[in-house]
Length: 403
Image (tube, rainbow, N blue to C red):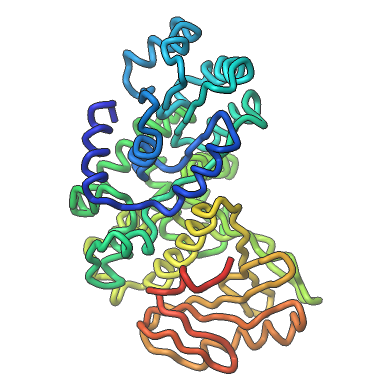
């Protein structure tokens, strides 16, 4: 996406007036670091956010071939043309700038820079090598439901929200999901994947992503993925790292507490956005989710992704796990708050059922004093407090569940 396209998108989203929760965290970073880096998936709203927050700084995108060439041919002169600093978008495309920026901010603390990028691996590698201690890092994910509500954007129902997901363009330009996501995947493959790793046959990689979507919310089985995709296990590991680095998927690790029971040590795979997950799962319309075989998996993915957004929006590192032993007992989510562990079950049913608290009861018996009352997050509308735990609606859980 070139600079003029990004500017048009900025205007659309500015008119929509979506206040991003992470703004407060970024402003705090700005007070303490000469460089602020805002990372996140492609089209999550990074450009709009940083241009709105830092209006006084000139904006340059490294996806503009002319700008990229200028920065490569004479980086020192290029940077000198911004006497007070600048915003550099998709800066991972111009990695040589990092060391020059380090020298500039060390020599003149008044010069400030804002960097953004959509590949976590490339950004993190450069930052750790050259800007460590000089940069504050924020991660911006697509809209959370809380942000959508605050902007008074109409959502028909839960299924509509799951189907559309949170990418801003589906809301600011009202692009239908079935039009948006094919183009998103195509752009992702052509730009991000090729930049991170030279993959010969992108159709095989596309099939691999779809196979991952079919396993969302499940234990990661590398051998099964390898067999189904027709690639080696080492290639599976490599391609998963690409999906993680570009904020397509994340892994939820199992909790280590075993209470003298054998535990799984395998992570689960989830997608950052349920709209993309639905598209890759070939769900064609929102109403299909009412009876889809993986409705529970998509809803579980939604809940966990919303909590991941909550952590990042507050400038915190996500501290979530799941728990599962070899007897089939499982807790979908363990929220770790240091000295307190909160068990959370996730159920896609609209109706409350007391049996949904059974695994939480089992957890309480094992964990004893280091666990606090648990929660069931479900697809109903009411929050209900019971003696055994609390039922939280999908509409309120992100605000009420402490992290």
